Image: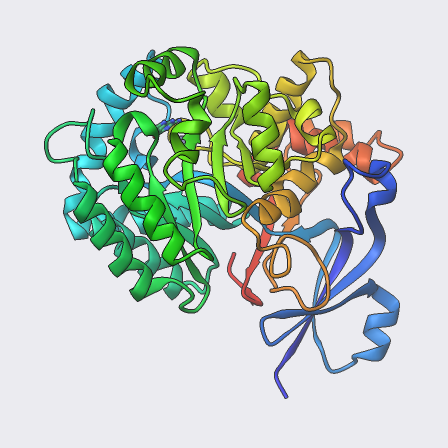
Length: 430
Ligand code: GUN
Ligand code: ZN
């Protein structure tokens, strides 16, 4: 029999979506709860007293008043942009040309790619992020580096080779054929191995010719259980550029749809300035929309319509979008999501923010039956939050009358100091 670990503390799990039920009924908090881990999975969630009594042989870790919840899921990141996070003064297109492309060029060097993959996974583990969907660069080596390092750590991750065959500098362009061939070879090597899955990754329609989009659409047709990740309607000048490049397209989404790149396993980052037809189609196919709030304020992109899109039943996840995003922290990202929603007169509940960072993102990745919640049978990726991690937060939390009220200052003001522990694949990883 495999060893049992019993984590004691306050626990937070979701019974249903807090966008579809009153938030405090959708989420369940146990003041003295426990999570039992066995063989890399969550074996039970319940009252501490009961689980202790029923499993006296389990190795106990008592986190006291700390809050045990599912590990954070970051549904859209660019790990190769780790080194250029928080670069000053540019909007999207200039930011890509000035900072991003020169840095991404360096990833033809497998050693450099491995070094940044390690650094990125160390930094994000310190923030309690246990799964992410990452863009790599056009170099297959950058994918190999990321998957190898994640595999070594037993992490569930999604990644893909970024494809670009125009509007990018020499040295950062592939072709329709090499994008297809390299992506296919990477799928065959990595997809479904251990906890790794592949996402076909056209960067966005301005950097792919119709021929490349067509080739990647055909590839997705061959591997429909792969995710497909790209960017959609992030900035208005980007949308104008897309109109000029694809004069026959009905809208931005149509530049993907026309080439077989719209589907339920599609992940569309940003999705801020959407036309009614685009919203309808995304809803119809059940595609994932990924909100990247610190990026949207940092690069000056706009205000995602969280209230409208969740009310109409869109599948929405949450993400840092590092290095366009200005933080690796999903706490900071929840705070930014709260602020953006507030600018649209919508007050998100702490339960909705936590859901977006866990179950919501897992659903966007079609992984809600594996990760993102504390539920028996799910994989044991867990974060433990200290709700009094700094004097500023502690003095506010001390006045709280409920766990929700105690949690909110950590969401708004917390950082990696609030991450008391991280468990990955059933093992204590931090
Ligand atoms: N659009 C196309 N590429 C990128 C990128 O790397 N970051 C962001 N934020 N938007 C993009
Ligand atoms: Zn992005």
